[in-house]
Image (cartoon, rainbow, N blue to C red):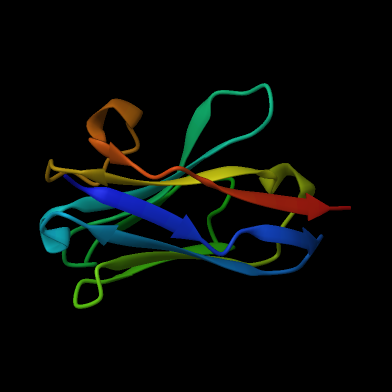
Length: 124
């Protein structure tokens, strides 16, 4: 059974940075497309970023493009989300997800495994 554990969340001021990490176990990490999603209070879960199995392809939501960077280390079974120039609207619970498909997709339904989430709070 695949398990995903996020870490690195916290409280930061506007303009600050955080680096989220997600450690995977119980599956063949290099076979998964990996994604990050977030859910703000009172809102639905939304796509943030995704990365292909080989790291060749990345995809970002327009709201984070140029500020966030997704990366992965298949040797260490980890995926990261470097978040710079954070804004109060980035406040949310951030979830790591793994897809057994081949597409670097934004679709929530395409992701088969989810972590428990890590809170990111950006104060103004």
